[in-house]
Amino acid sequence: MEIMPYLLFAFIIFNIALGLSIVFLERKDASATWAWLMVLLFVPVIGFFVYLIFGRRLSGKRIFTWDAKAKLGVKTIVQSQLRAIENNEFVFNQLEEYKDLYYLHLRNDDAIFTQNNDIEIFVNGKDKFRSLLADMEKATDHIHLLYYIIRHDELGQQIANMLMKKAAEGVEVRVLYDALGTRYLRPKYIRKLKKAGVQLEAFFPSFIPKINFKVNYRNHRKLAIIDGKVGYIGGFNIGDEYLGKSKKFGFWRDTHLRISGDAVQSMQTRFILDWNQASKQDIIYDERYYSSETKGSAGVQIVSSGPDSDWEQIKNGYIKMIMSAKEYVYIQTPYFIPDESLRDAIRIAALSGVDVKIMIPNKPDHPFVYWATLSYVGDMLEAGAQVFIYQKGFLHSKTIVVDGKIASVGTANIDVRSFRLNFEVNAFLYDHALATKLLDAFNVDVKHSTQMTKKLYNKRSIGIRIKESISRLLSPIL
Image 1 (cartoon, rainbow, N blue to C red):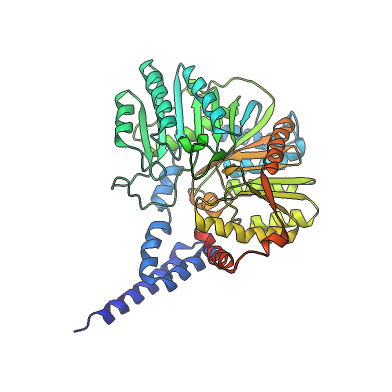
Image 2 (tube, rainbow, N blue to C red):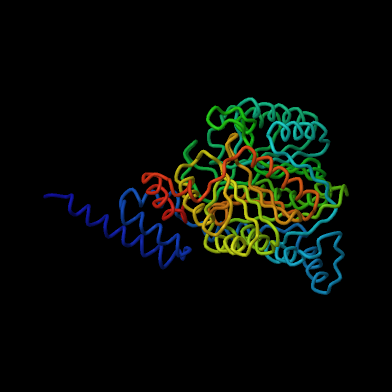
């Protein structure tokens, strides 16, 4: 008996059942639903396995476990700040005009607003890691690191040596890394750190070494907290390529912040919540983890987002920033795949006469994502935005600057993956001087970029246009 027709029929029925489950049970975003249905329709067998890897939702049980963690006293402070703003009793050091943005993050993410921070901006990896190593050298109580990627190359070894040295001195050292992003880290590296007294945990690990089918719901955050006094947040991971040593990418242009002040407490809370989710050895509240010192006058909110929330907190912050712009909005992102709401906000700003500039890299590290980015660039050009292609190396910076007053720096790209599928963290900054420095950095990068005009854009080859069209259709699930 010929069995192939029966197998084919079974696959078709199974495909239909999976499609129905996506529509009626998963309740995904409509654009993502259509994208997955297309995948199942055109590649029915392979599409099923692709869905298992990329498409499954985070289980309700896991979400509940995540949200059940204590907020470490955050709620009390948030409610106090909300009441003060509502009653016009909150004292703003500067930029009171953005109190609706402060309020949004307070309500949307329990993001405490602090106004006593000193911040240093890094735009290259050498300066950032030189500073981080120096601060770790000074640590006397604890070092907390959270990175999406940790390599076992020269920089990774430098970091490891410092961590082992401080652990030997009696400093508490904890390292949390994403199991997928750091899947190629050698077991020997991990064993050596653990033997030296460093506590390590992997986020959403796989049962099979180096093979992780949980492609979504990754911890893409990058945080470092030293003694509760100094914190680092931004786009750099730990690896030699972030120092510009990669032959493929060359100079690595990114943005990272060194913060001292009360915003470090919010970064510490984020780390503790993430650590306690991944580890069986919870960090219990202790005042020594929250010993920040008043250093400056910059306003900061540390905003987190992820699939554990019904809100897309960082994206909402981006939209609010863009809609508040009167003069300009400057955006840097390695991936530009905005959903409809963010796309409309940027287009409305440009059509309203706001100077909108968008900078993207000149080379892909993920081809489909890059082609989708190029497709959305056309929409921005039609609305009057200026688009720049960074040529000096690879642009990985995730920054937005508005009107020389407010800015955002962090880990969230402008794409669906960052807004809905990954765990991200950004610093929203309220300070003239910081915004001006980020503006200056953008203008320096413009000198190393070429401008994409409508004329150049329209000269794209047929092949590129086809790739863009396919990638754009799949963009909700990239």
